[in-house]
Image: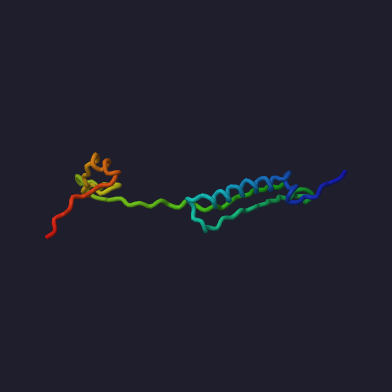
Length: 122
C-alpha cells in the first residue's frame, strides 16, 4: 500500500486551502470596501489542531481559517438636544432654526438659482 505524506495541501483532504481561499476573498473585498479604513491591518489566521490518541499512533486533526477584517467606519452626525414639556428630546435638526422661504416658481424659472432681493445700503 502506498501511503501519502501529510502536507498542507493534503491535510484534511485539502480543507486548509479551500478555507484559506474563502477567507482571503473576504479580506480582499474588505480592502476594497470604501466604508472601511483603508490602511487598517487585515489578517488571515490558519490554525491546525492535532489531538494524538493515547497510543500516539494516530491523531485527530482540525483546521480553521479566520480573517480579521477592518471594521466599518462609524458614520458621524450631529443632533440637537433640548427640553420640551419637561422631557428631554433629540432632533436631527434644530427646531428653532428659522427657514428661508423661497419662491419655488421664480427659482425654477431662473434655472434653479435663487435670487435674493437687493438690500438698501445705509
